[in-house]
Image 1 (cartoon, chains in turn red, orange):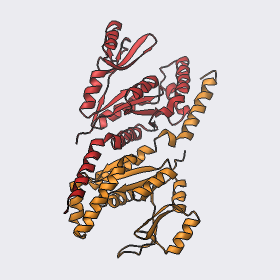
Image 2 (cartoon, rainbow over the protein chains, first blue to last red; image 1 turned 135 degrees about the horizontal axis):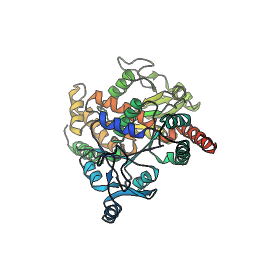
Image 3 (cartoon, each protein chain N blue to C red; image 1 turned 120 degrees about the vertical axis):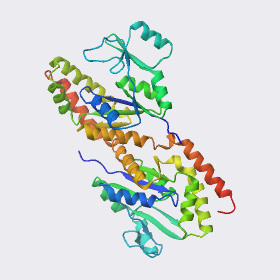
Length: 212
Length: 212
């Protein structure tokens, strides 16, 4: 019996390493499809069209919204970010688990629209380690690091709305835990109703037969 | 931070192979403790005291009930079966996941008393395979096989009350799926509240500091 794909949302504090976890999941395990967001933000150095994002302009983005072509979208710092619907629906119907790496507000929208989606929150082992990771990059100013820590403090209020938390102590362990959590979710009765109904019907039929 | 143990209930149709799955889980993975039931039924050939069951008499069993010494108990065919409380509580407090292999009514009692328990239902891939497994043993009369199939038909009505279903197609895969499901459950926010609160407090404290 064909399994249904699960819409998997991965969020987490900046610096928690969610990008690395997503990358590990895609590289090491079968059955996943990574959703690429659409944005009106300008590409940064090294970002690739169709890999990092689908880059587009405001007019096309708003036309896509009007055509119901996005699963969710939001605006940050004057730019649009959204999840194209066609890719998500196609891959789910193929039985693949579709990964969306989006922030907390987008995650809550997804949960509302897709109650069967699975929300994962990637966390560093401690606040101190988060700070060290952000500082250790050496690429951010103290102001930006402070902004990110402040934002993490705000986002931490929403952790209980996620289905699972993943502690990113070592990437390997965290990737395997993410995979275990998604694998486990396929074993929920609500995701196997056709199988359960079939079993029930067959057992009932056999019970009604006179001989075994 | 010390993790809490999970009370894991494993049920399933007779012939679904739940005993084999439990055995595989205990042998291949760390962190589990197997709860042994107490019963007033007479030992069958090959059954060992303290391994298969704790065998006792009616008087002692009823005294144990009166002293609140059982997590749950039930009567079948004139015999008592129950889960001793002390072992379960001791192992959970040590952080071990405690496995109870009990039938569906007992499982529902456990869920009511321990809302954080995890209920797994082991199923054969199909009703036909269940019948073949029961027939293939060669040790049961057609009447007994028919009784078990009828009982399975009745029990199948309760499958959705379980948290997860495990399809026992091959024992190896099913054992690993059981382990993944239990591992995943440790990553639920409700099982990590102390960690989340600590993270929140530390992030808030850092956000209030003027300098990073």
